[in-house]
Image (cartoon, rainbow, N blue to C red; front, side, top):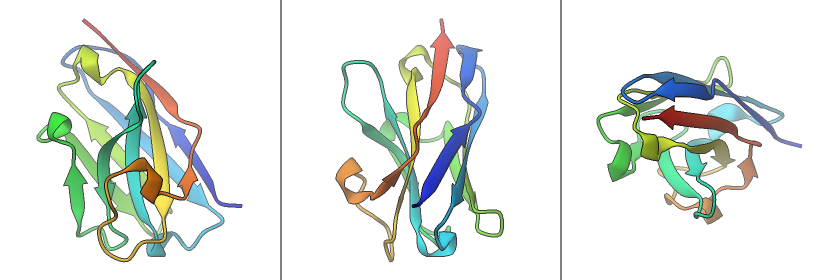
Length: 125
């Protein structure tokens, strides 16, 4: 069973930074596209960023472009999300997701097969 475990969430003031990490196990990590999604209470699960298995194909939601950076380390089976200039509207549970896609995966939750349990990010104003 594939396991994805997120870490790094917390409480931060607006304008601050956080880095989230996702550790993957029980999969051939270098053959999976990875993504970060987020879900606020009462809202849908929205894509934040995706990255292809090579790391060369990256997609960002418009709301985070220029503020967030996704990266992966295939040697360590990890994917990270560096978040800066955080805003209160970034408050959500952030989830790591994986899919055995070749190329850039669709930026929708239904395209991903495996999910972590999430880590809470709260941005205070």
